[in-house]
Length: 288
Image (cartoon, rainbow, N blue to C red):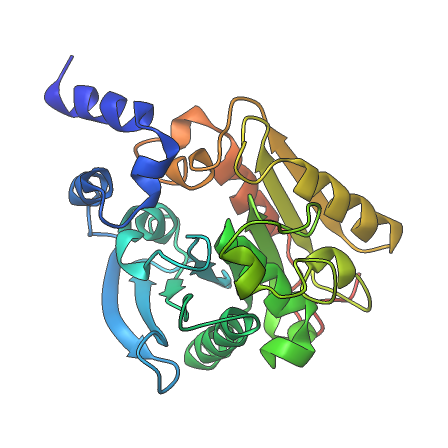
């Protein structure tokens, strides 16, 4: 077994939290062994005036004709996380010809709902303006998956003209409101505790772009009930939604397997690529 093989095996075996935290050396190692030849990166591009309103732009060295731009929103319980640790994910898609934008957004304790949704909307609009003429696919993991869903489903909050801006949404292990929030600091971040208009489950109305909802069946952090309930409600409303539940996948696996070093262990990345290739080309992305 080579040194690299042993290292990847060790990374794959780390607990979920180890790969999720920016301070963990595992992410640095994974990014360190990820090549940079498939993209040019612009760091800390402003999409607003506040410190956290910055995004990194990974421009594919060989762009795929007509491919949408991916805006990836990081997780971290709305209180931690950073765009700086997702080179491994961005590279996984730039090598397929997709431009990738990874924004930061305001975090607790500075931020409360709806600040994170407002910031996500601003970042998406900035990406759409930057790559004018290309559709945008909004992707997020965990808390970022919530932000992605709400940015599309709550234009009164995000400020987005969803149907003319967002060609599709992919929510990876996103809390949708299937469970009420009961613990601090979530009850402070979301005073309505996912029981009102702050929950995607309560925003299923009107036209929406195609949506892909993803959960691992071994996810004990944001369980598959979140995907099942939102998918059922969207289907009942006649919306285009794809529900994907993966055997053996935990909460962090949903981003780990998007790295070139782990994507052979799951069909998730190929399923995402297939979903993005199937999206409408506009001008009305919500048209069925």
